[in-house]
Image (cartoon, rainbow, N blue to C red; front, top):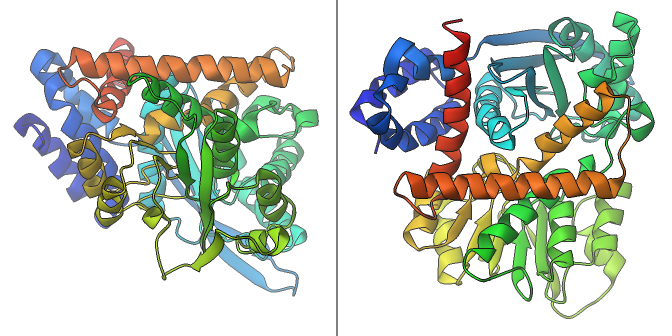
Length: 451
């Protein structure tokens, strides 16, 4: 339930932003946590502070024309929402996917603001993207699209203004093309303007692994509060992009047995444990559908593929669930299935992958639940470490970077746990993350005055 003093804020958000259900959902979830805050600190209601936090500082929408391999001109729409810069330059990924619209980008930018605050790094929140679909496009087509996208975007970003990174559909290839176009247009080798770059262009070691590793570090710390660990646990990870693959890798390193992964075509189950090398071959080398894992593996008892629409990956019994694909992928029905199958912990590798009904179900059942704004903060934290290396013209080892990532994720976990306990809800990581992130942003905004 939302405190009466905050309901007017939500009503205003709903009225000003019609037809944006994901943004509404993200704002509602945060406001539901803030009743305990304003009861202790009614001054946070002064000077429309919460209303300002819920309103993006800047929203940019632009046309992206490009030419495909047949010589036909295609038109897509580009977005950048610069949500909050109280703590530092806007920071957040760029997503290329047909589902992208302004509401999706606003929801992601809003979440990013609090996620970035939790890292303790000096970065604000933003997000961007396009409804362009890179899947099935040639390298030349992707390059021409990225160049056109950056031709407009470059005037709105900079290492002290807004620092984009990758997200769904945007990996090293796309970041490279965009960085090249930025360099051409500005005549500056401004390495700190984009993160997720190749190593020889100022990229950070462990960036590709960071979100998945970070989620796993957070869940390991959360399990530790009940004298548990990944060791010997059955784990299910949705998705098969960077976040999922490196969640699998680190969960296995911690002794977990990952038995299922997925993509938009369906999911595979391998009761003997997912073979990481095969998964990487399918997704990172071949860029193929997930069922090719079984073709490479050959006939094996306990390994099978279920097509999308014929079942849910969350039907697979497990001890730890790690939704790492996209928003609202894990429904209330899925959560009830997981609870019935004795799941003990859920770690969100994606942004808001669990619906509100699912979150309530987990919490009511006493399942340990790590929300994405805390658990998947490892990616942006390592992006901030990349910015640090770019600023000092330095390059850290993989081990040095991962050590800092592990430290940051443990600190985020402890901050969320401590905040939840302080506000009378021990073990509620959703409330702890929302309040801890909000307070840091709110205090900075108060210091800066009404701007």
